[in-house]
Image (cartoon, rainbow, N blue to C red; front, side, top):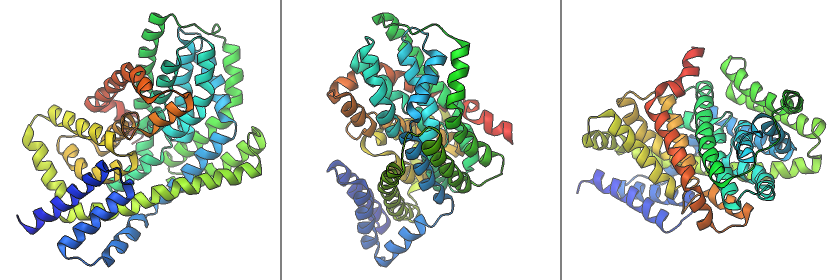
Length: 430
């Protein structure tokens, strides 16, 4: 065994062993990198250098602002406004509250950018509300957790910023634009699944559609939706950088939450900031340790070896694209979202580009795959949150979610094999 092969074996084997042993992901990434450096004979001082270099990125400055914006808006009374708006839009349909749940997640996701925040915030309101109206609680929970993944695709999403950094120079603005239609495709797929189940189980309809009520709710919710306009239009139009637009959005979110909606006071603002620091510390530790891991992978030529191995399975681009989806889905079952993006992007992006997948489209594919991973045991964070909010056993929630997994896979395949779904808006703005 050559020194290079030994180092690769130690790096990957130790990493996956620690994952199986349920080490915290940051520790698993850091310790496997340390073992690799020792096998290679490199000084451990390089560990600190790579970690500092990994978080010394201007584009990364947008992440804490987007996280802060999402927390402030989530705690500032936005949820109820967006649920009322969604109800005015689609509440009249069969299974109306399920449709409201899905559409509200699309709106709220554009503010929070977090599937976990979506599930915790909207789920705590909508799951009891749906149960009171005659919906099965496990069905209500399944709709909530699956629709929360729309928030990962609808900008502004800090995971898109992390992907843009990992991919090396991908436009954040283009990624933001690319997420809208895939998010709508995912919402549409979930709505079709919900409609079929609602018809079968005779779930109720809501009130008749009223244009007057819709306009009224839109006028109330416009303050919340304007935050998305500030970020997306500012970045895409070249008025702000992603970091500048995120900082402006934080100030705007603070004003709306405290002075307009009055859903949070200054004491609550400090608590929200404390939550932001906790979340941000986890993200930054992962990015720093993943930078070392990624450097080891690059130095050992693992991306090149992975490309040759995957392409060696078949020369059919459709088969290779399916393999990429399968790899990401499997990783999603054992790892959280941010580490997958940080570790898998340098390895799999060259494979994707070799079969003609644009880096922007691959970013959307990766984020949706990771979103599905958040709903799958044993590491499905959103699945756990949904079970906790609904006070249901995880096994019962997983069983109710099975039809929605199918809806999400259909959306994933459409996004994978029809580039125009992701690329239409970015190409339109070029």
